[in-house]
Structures are given as structure tokens and as C-alpha cells.
Image 1 (cartoon, rainbow, N blue to C red):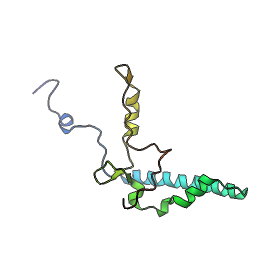
Image 2: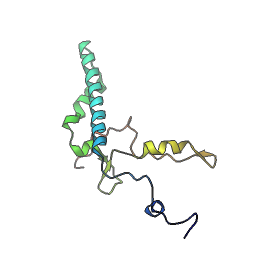
Image 3: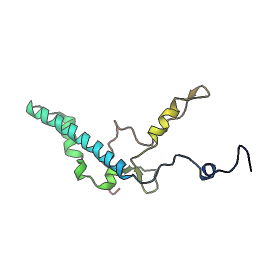
Image 4: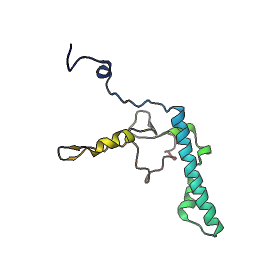
Length: 133
């Protein structure tokens, strides 16, 4: 009962840092800001290329395929498709920033496992989802 293994609220409740299943209004605002910043960069690059009468295939493809932040549905802004999730959706907030510092620690002479919940952002766009999801 008393000692090192006494039942405290933290020990009885499980993990100390649980991520809530929904985003707070501040997290949603930051997510919208990030999406708008990307849209502004793409627009700036497109406009500067247009002034020089040049075209870039990747920028043209982005403008043709990707929705802007204003055009996206809320479920697409704040969640993404995940085929392994129960309802095929996963929140865009992840535990990666919290787990990053733990990956530096050495365990049995090797690095610990990488705990990224989101796909690599340079390869996969989070704005488009499969039809029907």
C-alpha cells in the first residue's frame, strides 16, 4: 500500500500525456494558418513565374489538383485518411513533437524506434483523400 508502488492517480490512469481526440480552437487556428501559408507560397511562385512568362509543371499541377484552404471541408483540414484507423480518419495533431526527444536516447546500443504518426509530409499530400472518405 505504501512505498514505491502505491496507487496514485497518475499510475491508475495510464499514460500521463494523452492526446485529446479533437483539436482545440487554437490548434485549428494554427492548422488553418499553416494551410494558408502554403497557399500563399504557391500563389507567389505562380505569379512570379507568370510575370516572367514561365510555367512550372509542379506548380500548375498543384493549382489544378489541390484545393485551397477556403475550399477544403473541415474534416479534410483537421483529419486525414488512414486505412488502419477504425473510421478511416486520423487527426492531424500527432505525438511526433513529444516523442522526438526520446528518439535520441540510446537503448541497448541502438536508437529507439521512430514514433511518427503522420506520413512524411514531403511525399504525401494531406489535402486529398480517397473518394468517399
